[in-house]
Image (cartoon, rainbow, N blue to C red; front, top):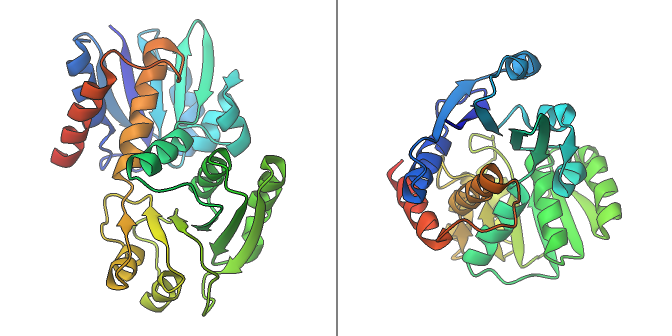
Length: 276
C-alpha cells in the first residue's frame, strides 16, 4: 500500500491531505494513503531515515524545503535553481527531489488569464520569492523588481537572475513610490506585518496582484489592490496546481506526464480545496 505524507512545522493547517485524498479517490487508487506529520527542520534527517519501504514520497512545506534539497540523491532543474524542493520521491532506493511550486505558480497565472508581462515585481526575498523568480524567467519576463524590507537580502536573487538572464533590481519595501509593472507577485506569509501605507504605495503602481497566500485572505496587499479598483488573485490556484504536479511525480516519477483524466481530477481537488 503506497503511503504518502506531508511534513512541516506547523502542519495542522495544511490542506494537502484533503487535496491528495480527493485526487486518489477520483483516480481509483483505493490503497493509497496520505497523512500529515509535524517535523521540525532539526529532526528532518532522523525522521526520514526512520521511514519504511511503504512510504513512496513526501510533500514538504516550510521549514523543510532546503532540507529536501540537501538530502536528495537527484534533483530536478527547478530544485537545483531554487535550492529548495517541496516533493521527495522515495522509490528505487533513491531520494529524488522536485520543486512543484514553480510549476504551480505558472499554471495558476495561466489559469487566471494573466498575460505574460515583459516585467514584473516580486514582494519578498525568501524561498518562495526564489520559486517566483524562476517561474517568471520561464514565462519570459526579462526585468524583475524585488521589493524587500532589507534590499541587501536580494543578493541571491540577483545572482540567480544573472543565471536565468533576468535583470533583477532591488527596492525597499517602505519606498513611497514604486515603478509600474503589469504584474506583482507577493510571496510574503499571510501574517507578515505589512502596513497599509506600504500596501497602498505598492498598489498605486498598478497592475495585477498575484498573492501566494490563500488562508489569510484578503491580505493587506490584496485589500489595497481591491480598494484601488485593481485585480488581486489569491494563491489557491498555486496550492492546487503544485499538488497536481506532485501527484504526477508520485504516480510516474515524471512531472510532465498527465494523470488519467486530469481535468476531472483537478475539478475534485478544487472542490476539496474550497470545502477545506
